Amino acid sequence: MKRYLLVLALSVFCNALNAQNLNLIPYPQQVTMLKTTLRIKPGSLFYTSNSRYKNDVLYLNSQLGLTGKGRQEIKILINTDVDGSGAYRLSTASNKITITAADRAGVFNGIITLLQLCRAANAEGTGLVLPGVAITDKPRYQWRGFMLDESRHFFGVAAVKNILNWMAFYKLNRFHWHLTDAQGWRLEIKKYPLLTKVGGVGNFTDSAASALYYTQKEIKDIVAYAKRRNIEVIPEIDMPGHATAANHAYPQYSGGKVKNYDDFTFNPGKEDTYQFISNILKELKVLFPDGRIHIGGDEVALGIKAWDNNPDVKRLMTEKGYTDHQQAEAYFLRRIADSVIKLHDKVMCWDEAVAANLPVNNVIVNWWRQNKPEVLKEAITKGYPIILSPRLPMYFDFVQDSIHLSGRKWDGRYNTYLDIYHFPENDLTADVYQSKNIIGVQANLWTETVATRKRLDYLLFPRMAALAEAGWVQQATKNDDLFKARLKTHLGYYKDAGIYYYDPFNPDLHKEAIDIAPKPEVTD
Image 1 (cartoon, rainbow, N blue to C red):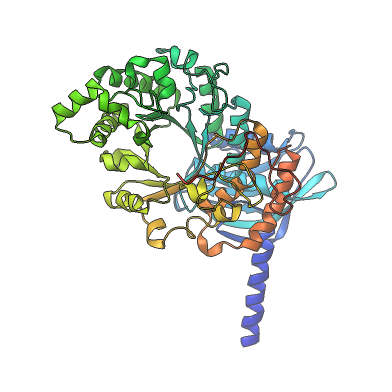
Image 2: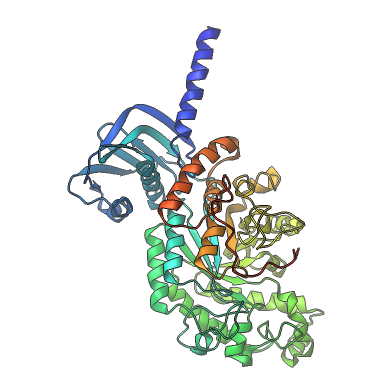
């Protein structure tokens, strides 16, 4: 009997190892290898009789470059017995492929798994042989996000679409788009054309650079492009701080000037400011219909001293009985949140806004200050839905290897792909990251040191693959050696796509892409 149990255990172990050889990222929750295989002949075409999901299957065909000279049926069954949004079951048998899911997100996730199976499949002649598998899978977190800052440096439609393509390939489903900041205003607002004509001028390295921004037509195109890939786009209009570009365009809404941070804030004591922002939000609502708007709320303290000499702020504080500027800041955030909620959208904000006591049922918090765990606990206690996006290890502008020179560190720490892979369990206690308030994880790429596509790619890859695992895979099934083995295959995908990536297994393969001269380490 013991011998039988030992053989059975070895069989299960070997099956698990074979399953991990599928080179899927993120790795599914449960994989069973079948004895059958599925042969895909040259020119085959996947299709479905379910008209609701034909576009998703067309996406699969386009990604594989299939021509349609032959036919390969993919049957998509939508059942409610699959647990949770984004969950799916996938089976590849000798004569059919079946995806069962509870919603469109699950169907798309199943299709992406099938896409990756095809990419890694063994070639037979000019066709492919898919392994027989039965996969049961669901995401660890519903929010699996990536944020790109385009205020400091602008990258354009092609770069954003490339990022969206890879996000879809890795089942990342939220694109947080930081479109305004001190260095530039990057989206067209028709009611206020100076926002782009004046506020779009310059970037982090060249204050006189020609105005660069997205037209509303381009925004709509990108949002639709993302939706086809099961990705929601969340715009961020940062306020009341980081508003310099907007205030240069319309100085009447500025909170004032202070050394090194002139016009950094909006004026919270001027009623016209709220109408100005409300009009902007109304245009955003049309451009970004997914139902969330990020209002920033971070680092207002950098320029808040300008309010000392602002008569509008003084009057507001007297009328409201406020004793410090943080109360005026909270008043501003509540007013703006109310404007967003009246548009029937959810409000998103950085973790400083937790102190403003915004309405819990309509607000989502990005916790980014890993040195402020008490703020995370406060947000949990107050009941806010929370996205974990701390600088360590989720900032992709941080150095990713000890040999690298350009990028940030925090007390000597930097963000390797394995740091990201083991987030959040290596950084937070189980009672925190397993809290029902935690709805997801997100990586952020701020672009002070990123001015070119080459460096953008270098910082993104392979850390995007690790981000995918962090958002999808449960801690108990993570394994460094197996992940590394799968990642090596994905480095080949980057090479085939012409991406200038960092190779952690061969650091000299691509030299560090440096756009801006490295500066001393900072910890703020």
